[in-house]
Picture (cartoon, rainbow, N blue to C red):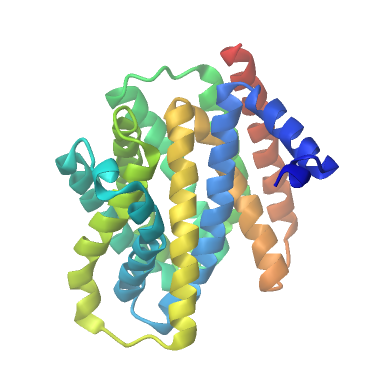
Amino acid sequence: MHLFRRHPLFRRAAIAHWRVGRWPTAIHALMWSAASGLIFVGLNALMRQLSLELSAFQTQFLRYLMGLLVMLPLMLRSGLADLRPVSLRGQFLRGAVHTLGLLVWFAAVPHITLADTTVIGFTTPIFIMLGAALFLSEPMRGSRWVAAGLGMAGVLIVVGPRLTGEGGIHLLVMLMSAPIYAVSFLMTKALTRYERPAVIVLWQAITVTLLSLPFALTDWQWPSLAQWGGFLVCGMLGSGGHYCLTRSYASADISATQSIKFLDLVWAAAIGWLIFGDALSQWTVVGGLVICASTVWIARREARAAT
């Protein structure tokens, strides 16, 4: 171990870690938020495929069950006492709201492309910022509204024509999940004031698994070995994504992290092209550039505000 620490690559990694640690807290929050977006886009791609093979509600249940199993080593290492929440009622209430959003989301996801799924998710930050200003008393600087508006404009450039085309009803159903998710994320932000991120992620997995089980049993099919493997990957991605998201909420105002979520469209386009061979349209490129511009701009503004 001592010889490994003397390796040049280890020293460079340590220096890089030290430099990143000196960055403003707002930048750390944006980085955690961007990482969660990339993970969730990959998760959505896998979940959509599984929901085409099994019932949507069973897919939801198994995804969170596997997420819970993935976290078992953490539970065993830390001990149950260390992972006991301060407010069990708050954890279950947040889990119930998130389960409702998932039920609506999964009802539509088998009928919607990965890009459309990602785009509909971009409406959630608008509801989050409104809720944060109304219920959490977070300051709403003009720069945050401008960044969110530019990001939404980029989304509309990409998907505006699809809203009135085939499958519009499913897009509307998925749109209904956005304000529900916003409430769930605002509750997560409130919980970070007295709960550790690992506790919040663990109890989300517990509560959603328990509350999703009755819906999964209505149309149960025994998964194949490959499907079990897919759900295991979903569990790891979901737990990792929610941990990154919770870390971002704990590092800065929730509204400060929302503009970077528009990068999810870039992640979705890249994954669709690399894995599924989806061609990028000129509107996707233009919209992606607008989104990236808004993300870079707000990152610089938040860094200045933190100094």
